[in-house]
Length: 236
Image 1: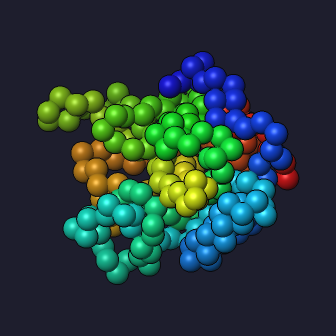
Image 2: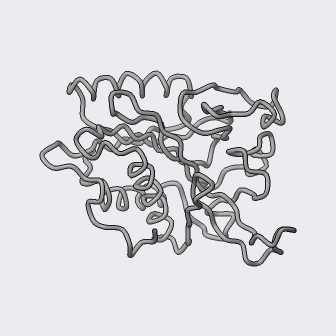
Image 3: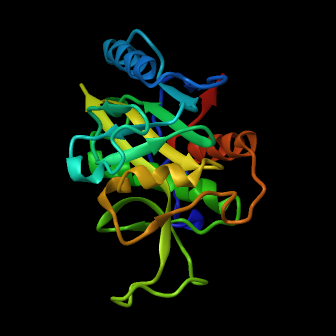
């Protein structure tokens, strides 16, 4: 799904308040973030809080999703490892990576997990398209990928490509939490301590690594514009 294929309001809701949009300053402790998300998701499910997109950066750490294979943690003592209830395998979070935690009530939208994941992928792809980056989805791999035609193909003939964004969500009472991460300008060497998302054949890249002098603030603006295209209006 590319920018021109995204239907306005694809996963929007009518009759509900705008989704709150919150950007956290500095670095956010991962454990504190999980506690906050769980409390907020419960409040949303009860009807006691607005839906929320929370943008954070974390200090360097690895997270293990529900499908994580222990053998994919290559450097166990390098950074803290957090076991988490989101789907997926091992991921890295750290400075220079924008993490967007998405707390939406799918009962107000569509109770369709596959469609929701597709909408999150579309959000990332549309955001990158606004920066002249062609992000692509893969049927056999979660996340968003960028082709690297300047590099030789793999031994099996597969074209070289790198992962630029990860997606991992959890639902409780049809309210989502966890979300997406986009590599803006993280230390890419930090990914070497894991097999990111269990994929060994391809690498990891970032917006800046692709040669674009984009800041975190630039990324946040693009994320918000694309989010509203797919999910509906936001408010501060």
